Length: 195
Image (tube, rainbow, N blue to C red; front, side, top):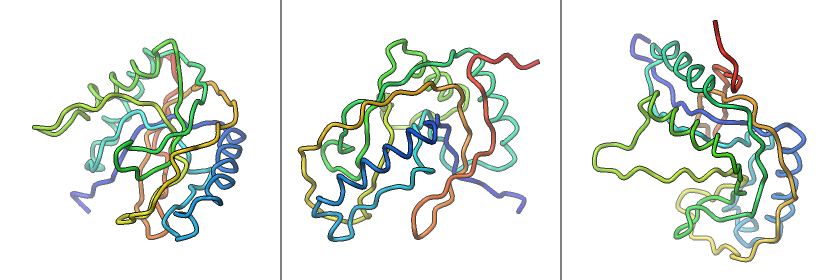
């Protein structure tokens, strides 16, 4: 276990009541999709819903303390911010693999936090890759790998929901046959100065 590693990412979680309402909306929508009837589309559990700020990939477990400190430092410089959920979208647009709902945050705090985390945690693109534009969203359902399902481009509006993003969470992702499971490893309240 000397070189053990973990698949890591940093995210903001919606409150339980928001996650429950989003998951229920997605289940209702998916019932009418041919992809769901074919078993190609799977709605995520409400407890799995999150807004990813920074994907870190596989990292040695020995780096956890350093990563946690970098997360706390970045979170200290960011204020809690109000997120409004917007339109549902298939992502990525050209060859969709997921149903998501957009998140809007006019102050720009969330985007600054995402950039700060990517820089502090050295989570930039691999050599030769282009940096992706930060597109805040919460994934609600995933298409089975290899599926060629036809997805309905017309999506009804999501519930009008908003929530206060108050902390960033360092997660470990466990990939399992029934889907990913997420384990919180560290929490960093936004705008809190650690002494």
